[in-house]
Image (tube, rainbow, N blue to C red; front, side):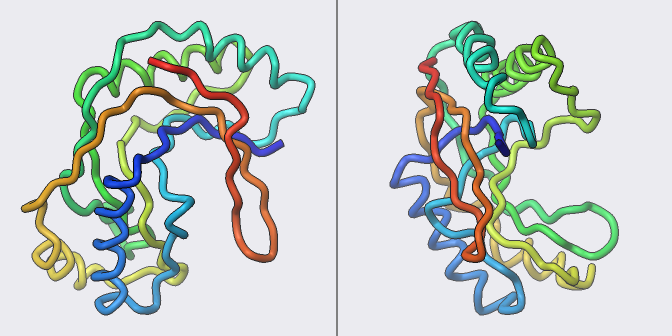
Length: 182
């Protein structure tokens, strides 16, 4: 099973990001855009895990300390990687210390299940589009200028989920396996 832990987006926040995607389509038509129903904030990519290990993982995630709900804000575009051709156009988001603490607690919970820790620092973003061949660095200033963080969207994060990612000829399809309230 291909798994990841994420924050699902509420409809108003998702719709805010869809409007940004729609505007981006005319600027970077060669990009492949994330399906609206697949927009989410990944907290931990797990990858392949045997089905028999999922209940123990759910128990470990269920034991994550509850910090209560917190706001998640759109802060502008994030163009990744920072150096070289742009491969990912994302919505940068900020959830403050509560988001960072939640992500660290999820990383710790997964480590108890022998799921390797991520060796890159957590960078909160929601992938809006991918450029398979990369976009030239020269479009970076144009994109950042055209899409400033002038009108931020915001939502209240009340839970996180363990998601199953199923690959098909239509792309990835996500389904919630387990939801954990904050």
